[in-house]
Image 1 (cartoon, rainbow, N blue to C red):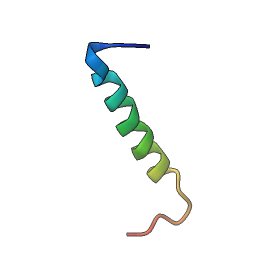
Image 2 (cartoon, rainbow, N blue to C red; image 1 turned 45 degrees about the vertical axis):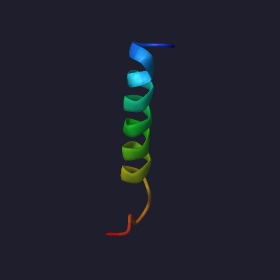
Image 3 (spheres, rainbow, N blue to C red; image 1 turned 90 degrees about the vertical axis):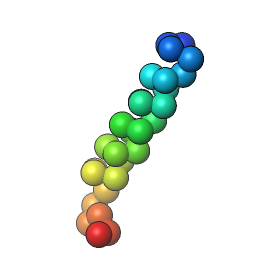
Amino acid sequence: IPMAAGVDSLNVAAAAAVAFYATRPAAPR
């Protein structure tokens, strides 16, 4: 879904990275 020259894509990527890190078991500090 193209939006605002890829700004949404970057936001989605950042959110996915945060979600991945948050859902990681025993996340390293």
